[in-house]
Length: 104
Length: 118
Image: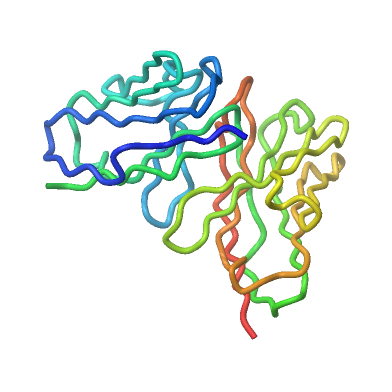
């Protein structure tokens, strides 16, 4: 079973700063990785699929990249509404444990 | 527009069962699989299983295999997820999600809270 490890567990940044979130797969998953954003009391929202493709309606400040089994979600300039928990998921199955992005 | 509407919150006793529904609209139901995801209070997302809504084939996470049953009614454009032998630690929000045209979930239900309490 593929295990996804996200880092860091918590990221404290200020609006306007750049956020870099990581997700490492325990074995190769090609580029079948998705990123989701979840705010308290809400369902997850799809941000990125196939490692680097933005979902419909997602702002351009969100981008994804892949290098082997390492995946990165980058938010180029944080907006107040971006502070949330982010999850990666492989092949529509296992999720990472999440990264909490909090306001510094 | 695509909508997934789930059934209301439930309170169940340990050892009992719960069956949650997920009503789909705004697209052709049999064109997209449905996944189920669990989220315990304050915890992360946990994939439970999925159903091919066209042929009814299912696949479950090893953790839930044998205790969870996912089904669908194509005429009602509804998917179901039943959990048997409920434990206190099954208290969670359960989400259904539509699989997009690839390995990702593009639309999610609003979630159903199941509370297991004696």
